[in-house]
Image (cartoon, rainbow, N blue to C red; front, top):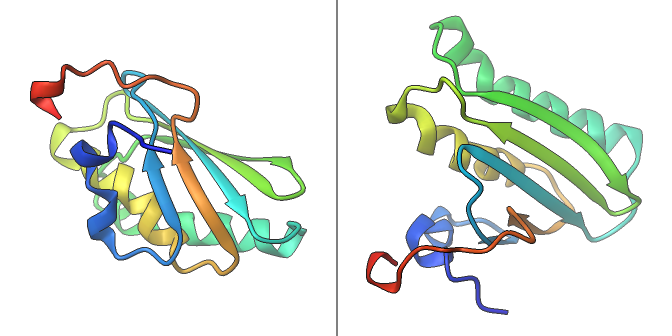
Amino acid sequence: MKYPCDDMIEFDKLGLYYEAHMAGLDGECFYYSVYFENSLNAEKLDEIDKAIYEFRNPYDDKEIYLGYFDITKVDDDKIFIYLDLGNVNPEYEETAIKGILKVLNNVSGIKSVIVNEGCECDIPDEYL
């Protein structure tokens, strides 16, 4: 499937071991649908939670806000990570958006991540 926002966000340049796409935009909110190759267990969820905490912690220590994060198990092979960039300094927005994907690259067993799955990319072609 072709994701029209992929060219704009350049996830392909992150060197991820799993497939990542940007399906659309929803203002300052980003919804990461994280699909796994196998069933999830509590240890894997803890690993993801810890990885995101460790990513955010250095910024928190410097009082740099990267947004509101929430992690929810959806199915046996899928989690949902919510990122709300409200009140984030614009210079750190890309850090937060791509940082989640980079952190997930350290977690084994991820098949793919679709950001804003179900949203449309309503950006005129000349901006893509």
